[in-house]
Length: 97
Image (cartoon, rainbow, N blue to C red):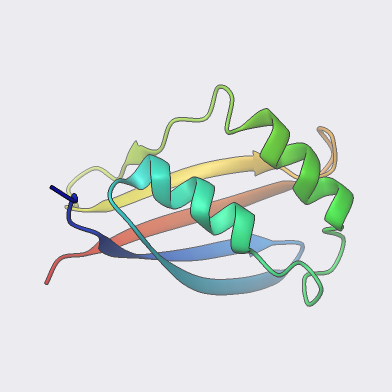
């Protein structure tokens, strides 16, 4: 039996820009992996394909999504994009049908 897939919205604040995309997944952890693997970095300043490859290899090591206090189905994560130099703040919102 296949697990239900939910729509997850990713809102990333990085290098003075805001980038929004959506993926389908069964959990927030799976959504994080799907999002990163499908993320188009071309329109994102100071975020290269090499940065993306490094993050995929690291596989969100030491990065568990934190449930936002007082909210339901909204998490926050941070990613070090440029090897400890640049930080992205990402909010994840799960849509329940």
